[in-house]
Length: 537
Image (cartoon, rainbow, N blue to C red; front, side, top):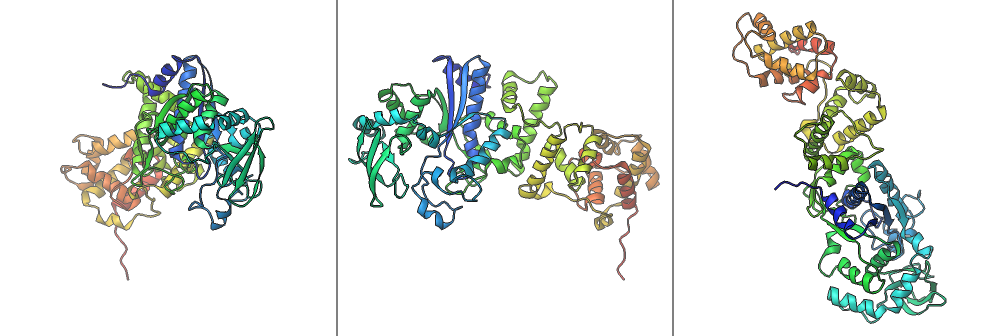
C-alpha cells in the first residue's frame, strides 16, 4: 500500500497528541567535519518542526553544538601535536587552521553556513556557554546528590557495572585542562563547588558553573529537562537496547521529573560502497563539500523522501544524476499542477523546498551540457540559457547551479558525462559513412532555412530523416543522388557527436544542439560532410 501521509506529519500528529507546545532539538558534536550523515539529523528535525508549525503548534527549533565534549583522540586529519589536547573540551582546543576561536568553531562555522544554505535556521546553543551560564548547575547538583540512583538506573538498563568511583560529573582540571582524567572526591552544594583529583597529579576545586560537564548519559536527559525538549531525532546507535536513550528516559523521569522527548530514530547514510559515514574513520563527505556539488533543495530531498528508519545510499557519481532527475520531475509536476501528483508526493516537494534558497528552473543535466558547450565561460552560459528559453534574471541562482555543475564535473562525474567541443572538425569524422555525411550536409541546409529551433524540435528533425516524404529525407536524397536507404536514427546522432566532439555519443541531443549558435552547427556539419583528413608528408 502506498504512503498517504508523510513521515514528518505522522511525527507531528503523534507529538501533538501529547502537547500543543513543542521544542524540537538536535545536537551534534563538532569534533570533525560535519558530514551529510549528520545532515540527516538536522533536516529530519527541520521537517518535524515545519510539520508542527503547519498544524498550528507553538513550536521552537534549536540546535545544540556539543562543544564542551572532550577531544577523544588524534583523528586522522590532525597533526600528532594534538595528542597533548586529547581529553580537553573541544571549545578549549586550538583551531586547526588558526583562524577560528577554537577547534569546535573550526568545524561548526562551515556547518552553520551549510544549514543557512539549506534553508534551516534553528536557534543555536553552544554547550560550553550553557554550562558557563549556569543553565546546568541545578541539574549537576541533582545528579551529584542522586549519584547512586543514577548508577542503579545505568546498571539496570544497560546491564553494565558502574565503577565504585564513577561520578555523573567530570570536573575540568585547573592544571591540565582535561575532563577525562579527573575523579570527584567531594562537593559542596551551598558553595556550588566540586573537589577532584586528576591523573596529571593535580587536585583542586572547581565551580559547578562552567567547571566541568555531566557525563553523556546524564548530560542528555539533563538537557531535555533544562530546555524542555519535546521532540528530538538521533542515530540508531543511541536507540539500541540499553543505549543512551533508554537510560536517558529513566534518568529524566526519575531524577529530573521531566518527560523524555518524542524519539525520531534515524538510520545512517551510506557513502557509495564505503559504508556508513563517520568523522572519526574519515569515511566522510562534508555538507559544505556536497553543497558545492548539489543544489540545496536536492540535498533536502535526499532526506525528506525517505523514512528516517530506512538507510540512505548516497553516491555523488552517476546515481546523483538519477536522484536530481527524480527531484526535477517532481518539481515540474508540482509547477504544472499535474493531476497525477498525489498529496504524498506534494508533501515531499513542499518539505524539500525552503525559503531563502535557490530553486533553479534549468535542469541539472542540461546545465552539465550548457557548461561544457560554453567551456565554463559564464557569459556564454547566460547566452545559451537565454537561447534555451530560460530566464536569466536571477543570475545569482544560475551562478550557483553553474558552480555546482563545475565541481561535480571536476570531482564526481563519470567519464561518459564529460565532453569537450573540438575547435576544428575532429579526425574521427573520416570514419563517417556516405549516408552520415549526406545527413550532416542536409541537416545543415535545413537548419539554415529555419528560424529559432528548440531542443525538442532538433530531436524530432533528426528522427524525421527516416520518414519518406519529410523535408530532411528529401534533402538527404538530393545529396546521395538516390533514395535514402533504411535509416537508423542512432547512426545519425553518432554523426552529430562525432563531428562536434570526436566521439560516438554525448549528452541528450536536443539540449546539446540547442546550446550552440546555429551558425556554428551549420559550418561544422558542412565541413564534416566533406571532411577528408590531411595527408602526412
